[in-house]
Image (tube, rainbow, N blue to C red; front, top):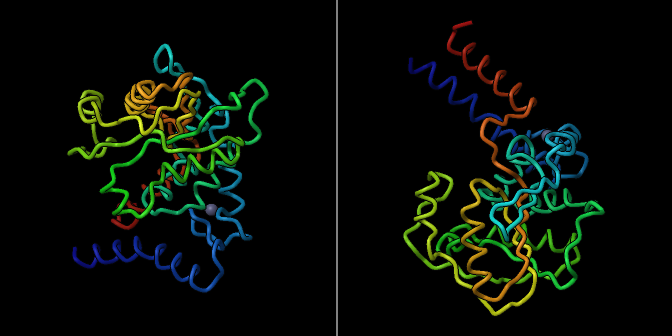
Length: 256
Ligand SMILES: [Zn+2]
C-alpha cells in the first residue's frame, strides 16, 4: 500500500520536476506553460496554441446581459488552454499568460466598438492578498487588454478589507453576502468604463463593481471577461485528457 502511494506520488511529481529542469536548461519561454513541452520561443507549444485558437472559438465575443445596464462579453469557455492560462496568471503570477490571453482580443470584430473616452479598469483584489501574491492579476490583465484596445487603463475601484472568503468556493447567495459593500469608487470618473476580469461565473462580482462604478459617476459600463464558467461545459480535448488520466490512474492501481 505504501509502495503504491510512493509510486503514484513520484509519478505525479515528475512532470513538475521535468518542467523545472527544462526551464533551467533552456531560455525563458522555452517550455509550454500548459503541457510542459519545449516550444519554439513562445509560452505555448504549437498544439496548445492551436487549441487556444480553436477550442471554444464559437464563444468568442459572446454577449450576455447581466442586468439591464450591464452587458458582458466573453471570449472562451473557462476550460482547456484558456482556463490554464487564467490559472497560470492567477495562481503563479505569470504575466506572460495575461499577454497571451489579451492577444485573443484581436482582431476586435467590426461591430464591437468602444467609445474613445472609455477607461479600462479591473476588479481589485483585497490588499492583503495582493501583498501576498506580489501582483494583482486583474490589473495585469486589464493593462494588457487596454493596450490591445488602444484605451487608457486606470484604477477606478477600491476594495475594502473585509473578512471575505474566496468567491470561487461560494454559492450564489454566499457570494452576494460576501461582496456586499466590498467595492468603492476610487475617483469621480464620468466616462464609459470597460471592466476587465479573468472569468465570469455568476456575475455577482461584476454587478457589485458596476454599482460602485456608477456611484463614482461612470456610465455605459461593460464587462469583458476572458473566460466564461459554463455548467457542464467540458471541451472535447479536456474530456479526452480526463479519460486518459482516469485510465492511467486505474492502471497504476492494477485494475486494468
Ligand atoms: Zn503545450
